[in-house]
Image (cartoon, rainbow, N blue to C red; front, side, top):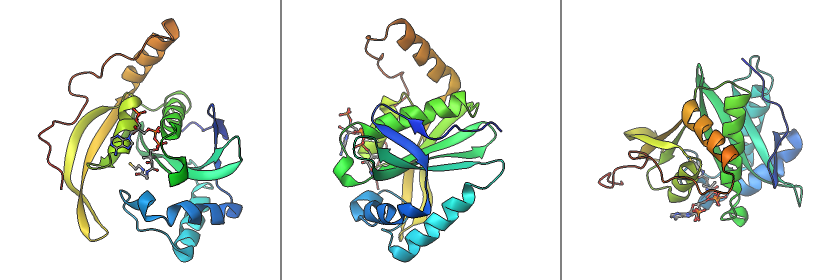
Amino acid sequence: MRRLTLPRRTPRLVLRDFTPADFDGILAYSSDPRVTRYLFFAPRDAESTADYLEDLLDSQRETPRSRFELAVVEEATQELIGACDLSRIERGVFDLGYMLGTAHWGRGYATEIARSLAEAAFLELRAARVISTVDVNNRASIRVLEKLGMRWEAVYRKHRRAKNRWWDCHLYVLPREVWEAEQARRASAPDAPSPPAAQGSSPPSSSPSP
Ligand SMILES: CC(C)(COP(=O)(O)OP(=O)(O)OC[C@H]1O[C@@H](n2cnc3c(N)ncnc32)[C@H](O)[C@@H]1OP(=O)(O)O)[C@@H](O)C(=O)NCCC(=O)NCCS
């Protein structure tokens, strides 16, 4: 498998490998219940943060590496503000995710991260598809996936049991050909707005939430 070149830079962020020195920063954002509300894990305490950090540092040593769980650092302040990940789930298919401390929500950062990771998946890891699963009620994350041009593909009822409940999740998919067509369109008309989402790219409105 091809390699991901790190760190990755976006207009305002740096995506880099975590180090042991990131412990306090991780604990700060991932101990907040607002951040973990739509994530399968409960707010982290010091012990679970240590386990998580140890596990992801181990994953950096895998060869070939299949999991890229990365620190999100704000360029202007050099502050660790969250995490994002690109994980190979099968040949040519990568799962995309992100989380940010609440102080940094609503500034377009997740969209910037998602665009950068999708580009990395297609250009460096030779992905055929990038996918993401998202809780059906996680409106902010669904919006990020739609801004990235991902297509709604399915709803998984009772996708997972975590935190004492069943989770219904949407599956969003970005096929390589759709991403390439959008890159070509932007290159030829950089100022033109994105076309409206293709039919079938949003969940059916009848899709009930839990
Ligand atoms: C999901 C998350 C990463 C979004 O980060 P962000 O940097 O605020 O996202 P962006 O600013 O790039 O885009 C958010 C979009 O959602 C919209 N949005 C935010 N809250 C919303 C809501 N409750 N309902 C509908 N849209 C909402 C914003 O208006 C924005 O869309 P716009 O650009 O069209 O205005 C952040 O909320 C987070 O860390 N949540 C906790 C972890 C999480 O749920 N991760 C996703 C797991 S799948």
